[in-house]
Length: 199
Image (cartoon, rainbow, N blue to C red; front, side, top):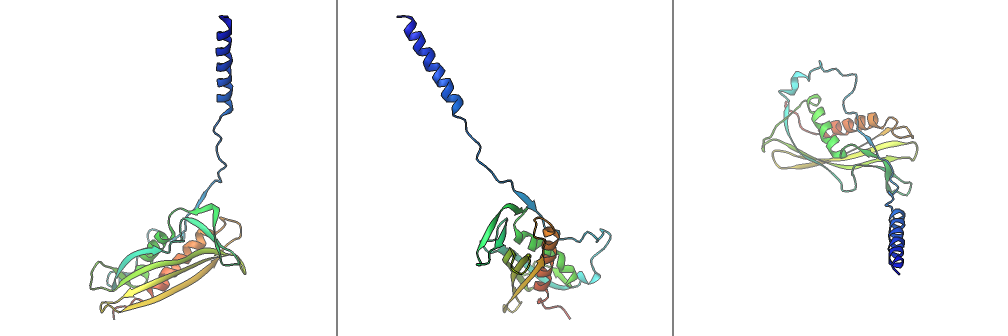
């Protein structure tokens, strides 16, 4: 009789060990993500190059916050033939694309003959990234569009939409980083072209 409770506890402890070994937490299948960072600065430019002298005496402009539409995030978007935007499972931008556009605007200021100021009496420029995705129709291209809202000192608002695209290789990442940098610089340049210059 004394052996029966000992055997029962041995069987119960053996069952607990077997059940514990069988209950493992399996790691869910995860798709690895990879980052793309637009190449905003041309590698052929050297640090010894200085901005043009006209940048210090250029027309004043106040840059407001650069934003993006809600569907534009860090994931690379692909536009389907139906027009639907699908997030890429693997590729992401290393930061939000509107931050890159803001950096491109700052880089283009000097070459556009403008000077960044923080005066309420100066014209102000608000920028919204409207589109930023890969299209495959008629060749693979990175497409971008931005809305530039220029408010003059007289409080008259002018809207301008710049849209451009850059061809990219079909296999990612390919030349996406360089194409994204060129596209952002072109959008920023087009947006700043509508700012009135001092005479």
